[in-house]
Image (cartoon, one colour):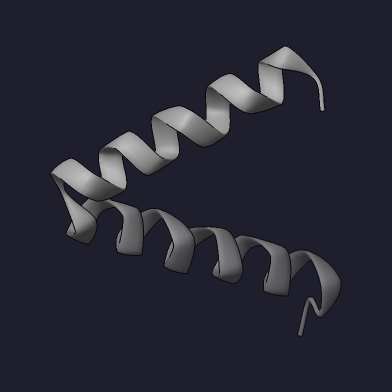
Length: 41
């Protein structure tokens, strides 16, 4: 695993521990973005 990916994952987990709501919003937004790219209808 690249060090850069490890940093992103650890930051994400840290935010998740501090503020789960932000993490939830980010993951929902990520799902929405990936969904619109896969199925643009």
